[in-house]
Figure 1 (cartoon, rainbow, N blue to C red):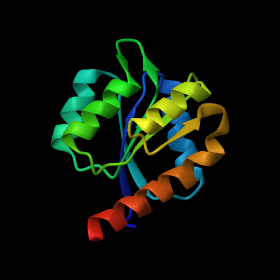
Figure 2 (tube, one colour):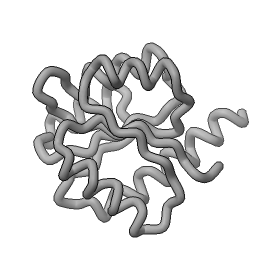
Figure 3 (cartoon, one colour):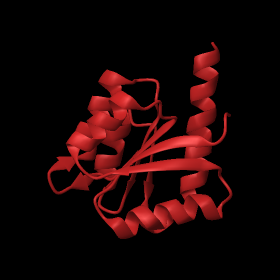
Length: 130
């Protein structure tokens, strides 16, 4: 897995942006995180960056994580997409996984975030090599 990872993070709450950034850094993963909160910024960053992972909240005020995932699948299907959310129920989580999400992590269980990111990045690298 190439390090540092470049992560695109779609999130509207500045406190959650900082919490997730601190969680990843505290667990020792070298990465650069680009945070965006709008559809327009998200699409611009996707078009102009070469990200290793996308993290996304499920519900945002004027945009939603499922739409963000579908945009990513269309423009850069090789990038793993992980939901990091506090508002996703089990049924919605299963639905997003069926639609192509790599994983989901609940905000109150951020201890799962680093393993999810690491697994997704390694799987993505294996796919690129084959």
